[in-house]
Length: 369
Image 1 (cartoon, rainbow, N blue to C red):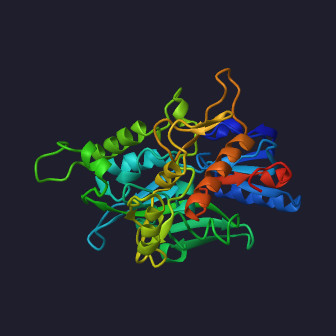
Image 2 (image 1 turned 90 degrees about the vertical axis):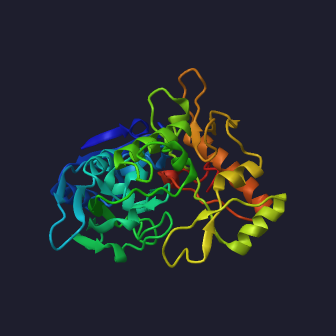
Image 3 (image 1 turned 30 degrees about the vertical axis):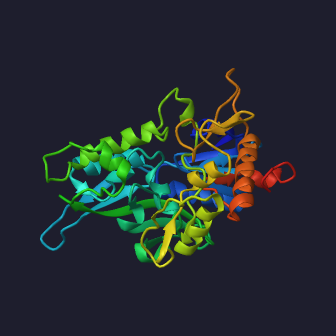
C-alpha cells in the first residue's frame, strides 16, 4: 500500500493529483484484500486499468486507487464440437497485445480494435469499439468481484447490458464490480471485418485479388490509420496526450439526423449505430462533425488544453511548451465550451467518454459540475 501516489503518470492524459492510497492487485485474492481494506475504513475505491479513459482531478482522489494487474491468457482451441476458440484473458493484460496475439493465431473478431490503449479489463466496461467492431460481439463471459455482495460473479454476454459505449459496468451499477477476467469467443480462420472506408483504403492491394487480407495485415493497417489520426500512443507526439475520443458519437433517429443537417444546410454524415435493441432503427452522427460545425476544429487551443491537430474528437494536453502540463480544470473548461457550443447550435448535448475521477472534492471550482 502506497500513500499519496501521483496518478497523472499512470494515465494517457498525464494529468491529475495523487491518490490518498494506492495498491496494485496481481491476483484475485489481492483484489478481495484491497476491497476489504477500503470497506473497513469506509473509504472510496476506484479501479484503474491502463489509464486510457480517465481524467483525474487536480486534487487527486481521496480514497484507494486499485490498479488491476492480473496477467495470463488461457486458450481453448476449436474442437470437433466447437468451431470457435475461447480466449480467457486476465484483466491486467494489455489490450493491444491480446489483439495482436489473436491476429497472429488467425482468430478473427477483434482485429479492427488494434492500437487501442488500455487493459483487457476495461474493454467490457465501455464496450470498446472501432472500425465496425465492438467487444460485445465476441465477449462470452465477464468475471468480476462484486464489491456489494463481496463475492465473485460471472456474467454471460447477454447479462452485461451492452450497448453503444455502454454496459452494466458503467451504467446504474458503475463502481460495483472489479473486472478480473474477460472471455472472448473468436473465429479461427475467420474473415476480417472491413466495413470502414479508411480501413479499406489502407488495405488496398494488401492481399491476393479476391481474397481477404490476413488478420495481421489488418491490425497493421488499423494502427497506421490510428497513428495518422493521432489515436496511437507514440512517445513524444503531442497529439497523443489524450484519452482518445473525448465525446461519444450521438445515436439518433434518421429524422433527427436530417434535422441536425438542416441546421447548417448540409447532410449530416452517418455511420452504423451497431447491433442491439437500443440502436435498432437508429444511426450515429459523428461528434467530430458536430464540433466542427459549432466552430471547434483540429488544432484549436484553450489555455494549455486543445484539440488534436489530426483528429477533432481528441482533446489533448498541450502543455505550455515549457514542461508545464494542462490541468484537469483546463481540460474540462475546453470540454464545457465545446458542449455548450454544440448544444446551442444543434440542441444536442454531447456525452463525454472519459471517466471523471476525484471531482466530487472540486465541485466549487469544477467548470462542468
